[in-house]
Figure 1 (tube, rainbow, N blue to C red):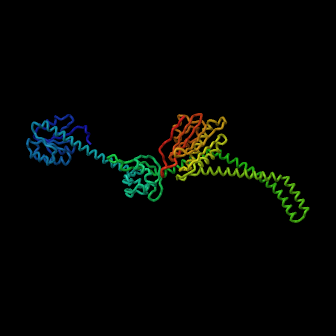
Figure 2 (figure 1 turned 180 degrees about the vertical axis):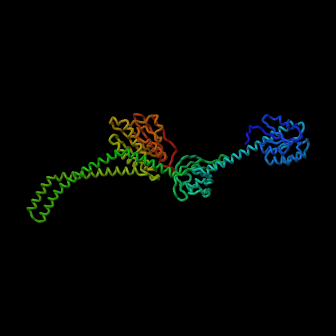
Figure 3 (figure 1 turned 120 degrees about the vertical axis):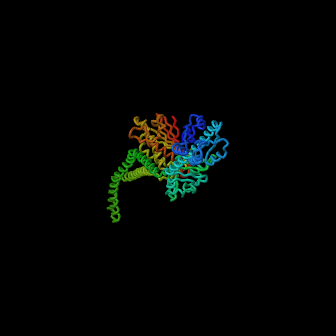
Amino acid sequence: MADSSSLVRIAVVAHPEARDGAVVDALRRLAGDVELDVVRDPAACIDLAARVPLDLVVVDRLVGAPRDALLRTLRDRGVPSVVVTDARATADALAAFRAGAAECVEAGRSLAHSLPHAVLEQTRRARSRREREWLAGRIGALQRHTENIIHDLNSALVVVDGDGLVTYANPSAAAILAGGSDTGALEGAPVWRWFEGEPERTRIGETLRRGVRCQGAETQIRRTDGALVPIGISCAPLFDDAGAQCGAVATFQDLSEVKQLREQVLQTEKMASIGELAAGVAHEINNPTGFIHANLYQMSEYVADLESVWERVTDLRKAVVAGDLDDARRAEAALARAADDVDVDFVLGDFGKAVRESQEGSERIRHIVQDLRDFARQDTGQRAPADLNQCVDSTASIAWTMMKHSVVLEKRYGDLPSVPCFAMQLKQVVMNLLVNAYQAIEERHGSTGAMGRIVVATREVDGGVELVVEDDGAGIAAEHRARIFDPFFTTKKVGAGTGLGLSTSFNIVRRHGGRIRVDSEPGVGTSFRVWLPLEVDDGDDVAPDERGGSAT
């Protein structure tokens, strides 16, 4: 498009034998932003118009017969023209208009005024028309560019009307929803076909019903072939020219690979926690194993002693069966001596005690192994009702094997309803918070030998359940509190932590639609509060980003 601030370029077509007269003089009265080109015949004008952009052509009345052919050519090329005619030459003016002239101006005294006025008006109109054409071209190019971007976008994009019917879908949407590239199979179909649950409870339904926006929510769709696909979705309302909501637009991505990677990270972090507990677990298992081994050794001696007594019992039985009274008396005396030597009453009592202790030890080992196996198990990937107290208690039992000799662990469990959750992930949160608390206690009390204290409490509050893990450890410095949930941020010594524990916990709680808050004071201790909702949207796994505040 010609710059609106550039020179106005006007060509004047004069008769070959005419001098630059009144027409050129009148045009030279225009402002200084006008450039005049004077040509002597129509052919030269057409050649000039082909080489440079002309805003207007002024045709003098002395051109003669070739004038009308020139006017038609200029009209076809979109160049406006103003014709100067003789005064009161009505027929000539009509002929000029029919040939394509935009305006006719009579020669005479008023030419000096009327011609510049006509020229400026026509150049303004020409400029305005070209600007509209340029703008339309740019808009068209932008639309094509936008369509290409949307068409080739890696993210799926779906537009629905007010009733939830698909009006547009790009190929990525067809690939995720229908497993193919045919977008025609989606258009006109109700979007609820793929989004399970009550329509108004889905993210798109919420946007259509209430006009709310959502960004980065996790849910799942059921593809046309029946397969469930986890997706991350963002929705926004669409409005018509009057400002009324007329539909919604949704973009989403297949999170299958992301979810697998996330589960791998969670599992890796979980196994890292188990690694930190390994020494404590080994010690905890070694104790019952040790006294089971000792008891078994002692019971083997008791069995040997009882075998010697049993031999005398066998001799007595034989004598009784034979009816030999003297042999029976001798056998009974020998049995009595053997029983006294062995101290049968003590052996039988201690044998039973050893058996009971061994049973208790083996049961302790079984519980430790069972808790470890439950903790290490990968999540099913499906939210299900779970007993939060059981999740907390079994995880605390594992953690206790690491810290029981230096920490007092106090449990305060309230009566809780079942919580819709990913149980294995919540156990990871509990473990991370307990390990974090234990390390804070070691940092503060480790060199003094003093006992630390951790309180684990649960309760029902505000339409959800709350888990509190509180310690009297070193606390968190004020400058670090805002970053404790950032990935890889840690204040521990090199090798003492990955910096992923609290970040992982934050993301798990956020995925449950909950929130996690921290209160801490250096040298006094730290309290983490995790709140989880009892009700969640169908298929919705992500809540707004809320880390909660910190206080001193």
